[in-house]
Length: 121
Length: 250
Image 1 (cartoon, rainbow over the protein chains, first blue to last red):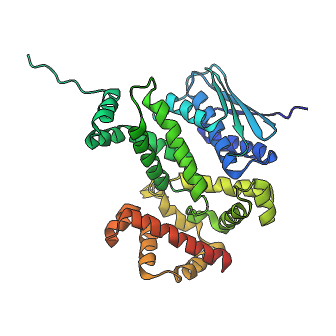
Image 2 (cartoon, rainbow over the protein chains, first blue to last red; image 1 turned 45 degrees about the vertical axis):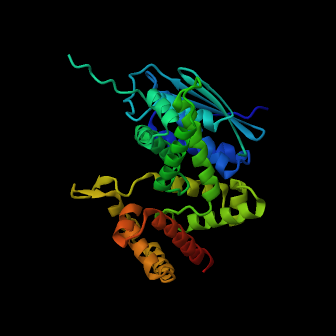
Image 3 (cartoon, each protein chain N blue to C red; image 1 turned 30 degrees about the vertical axis):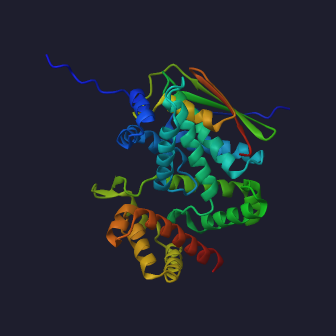
């Protein structure tokens, strides 16, 4: 049976701790090394922050699919509300390049980011 | 009419530097991309790694990227530079993970965790997993995660950041730390710290006093003691290692 964990949280920077801990939990089950686990947390949280800059993102749905020695993560922006206050320091290009450097596979769409991180680096 | 002088674009300056090797142009390019280095350091300031150290690593990586970038290739500089910066910072974390300074508020468990991480990684030739750390310390996995997460939270808050006290006056975040140390745990920690400090020589004590009690940066500490920032940074790491050994091994 496919292992799947789904987390839906209000799109807010202060909820990133929840995302990071959930990713930690999922990676621990896969026996990730500490460095790989930290990278996975940075990557998924960055994907969340990326989508939060998009128009009307109210809720983030994070789906984690742990498989053999790697973690597949899909982050979706849900909602049609008012745009969130923009982070002045946010730089979409930087985020995308940083994510690419941390992941084995990355797809960035307007309201969805999917990525794959390996358990040992 | 006087013709307005055109300011060269970043791409033009990169090309100019590539062909002339003029360090003034390179310095300007470093200034232009300094925020990118700062951002990378912030993103990876984790597990007790000091922002300042990571920032230095990111800046060195930036210089390397500027030196190696070939503007004649069909590639944007940032596309080339960001992976370089991320890679160098990650290498630094991997190589120096065992000697990185721990935030003083992370407590004894964080010290034990780091010591176990160091011992296991030497033993196994790779970084340990959370499972292995939990088994080594005989604590639940969740506790290991909590400690790791707590280290992250502590290290991303600047002690120099301003906040308000009960009277509405602006004080640094560091000013609140004294309150957290109250109680028996605080007394024990201070006693342990006092004993650990007694293992240091005069110069080491002065460095620690300025850095951690005077809340001075490495640069300011160096200036006050007539030492270079690099020397302060190196010595500080050695001191922390010495104190950590004392605290964990007695």
